[in-house]
Amino acid sequence: MMANSGKKWIVWITIYFIVVPHYRCQRYHPGGSRLDMEDLLGEKHYDEWGHHNAEFDHRAFIGEEDDTFHEYSEEDASDRLITVFDEIDTNMDEYIDKNEMKARIKGNQLKRLEKESREKFKVLDVNEDSMLPWEEYKQVMFANDLAENNGKLSDSMQSMYTNDHRKFIDADQDNDGMLTLTEFAAFNFPHNFPHMQNALAMESLDTYDKNKDGKISWKEYISSMYNSEDNKEQPGWVRDEEKIYLLRHDKDGDELLDLSEIKSWIAPEENNDEEEEANHLIESADLDQDGKLTREELLSHQSLFAGHTKKSRKYEDPDFDFDYHADRYHDEL
Image 1 (tube, rainbow, N blue to C red):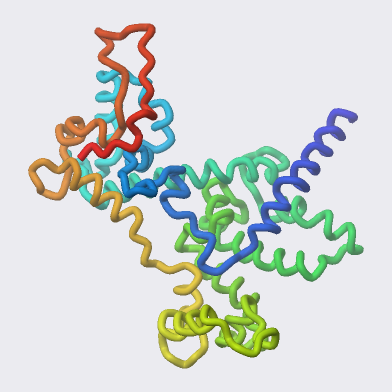
Image 2: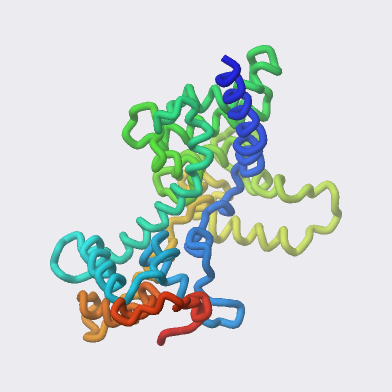
């Protein structure tokens, strides 16, 4: 009994100091929460002087395995790259085209989002069955507030409850009432998943639409950032924001943002990170300039896709210790 009680206290302490603060401090900020490729890969593509960082390409292509790839011998690295080639070549035509390369890069980013979500998922998954139903999530996240307020949620937590429930429903793509780790990654990082746009737009509408007409006016839009009553003269940045509101967000020119315009504002679709990286990788190794890669082209550009490895097995020296970080900002081209 004491052991179970102790475990329960550990769970609640973890929730109170890790999970709840995360959700409270990372509440929705329109257009500002999407993690780009550099965030997800943990690498800058170019440094502050414009030098190409080869490690960015390695992580985009190899994924998490990049952390250990430099330990392979040349032969083992070649064998692994052939396996990776076959994984990417989903239509089995013996080539990697741009769409297959984009899918590989997106898949590696999804794995990173899952990794970033795993700790919180484990804390929320109290019964440790690798599934998170809404009731379990609700019990963990809101039980303390309910207990403190005689079974009712405070206003701030009620807003959080509504927004989280909406996101939960949209993240639950198989509609089974529970989230897997992959689905929870969409719940946790909604700006990175197109199918979460509606939940984000509704959350934005709830936040800004003060007169509850289902749209966001310029006054409602700017009021969260600037109080016009505090200053007689309007700052220049406010005028700049108004131009952005009218020219970029208000697509039909009625000086109001409807739901579709809000979606474009908070989760713009024009993200070309994966396409640009796919083009970069293919163009850098495409020797015959046919727009796709063969196994031979991949293997002949091993440093581009996977970086340097240890020397050949037949020449291995037990004292050899290659510092693969020393060349991370070398541009192979």
